[in-house]
Image (cartoon, rainbow, N blue to C red; front, side):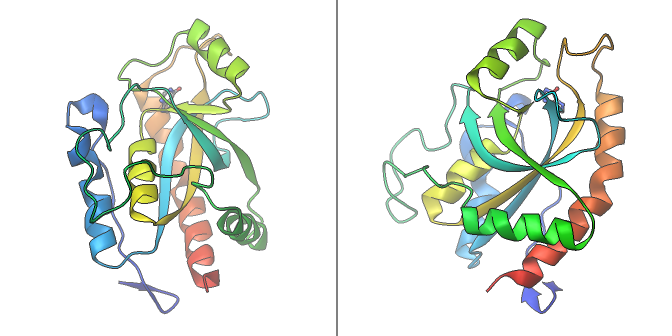
Length: 206
Ligand code: HPA
């Protein structure tokens, strides 16, 4: 469809590595989008908040990520027609695009925090010890998705903007236990904010 006069391919739902899909399958939609001519990818996810300034319901712009899964969708023979063998990841989430996201949020009174996303394979939530480790490593939020798609996009030369919804305090930070129902409920409430920010950002692309 179109958003503010721009062609948009919207994908709802993704394959996760923890479901057992081969990494090539997880990133196939990104490669199809590239072949359709997509130049900018917006990714969203649900994350556990590690940074003490993050609270459930917060929207956090992904400024960078850590791949702590031990997996990478580019393992195997390189598909030279798609991209280089050793892709540069030094600006996976380009600053110019991050500034547009921030401005889009501000234009609608939505505060976008900013942080480093850690990808762990899952499907278990983390242990409190793992969360303390991620915190010391410089991680601000944690989840089980997104990074494979971002790696594939970098490989393809697609620029990426990412927003995480903090659905819960990461394990051990609060007395409460983690559960999927709470994560889903908070994520659903964040939908409208996501839509507003993405629509506004798409409208501001050159
Ligand atoms: N950990 C990992 N993935 C998640 C979390 C979490 O706390 N919340 C939502 N997705």
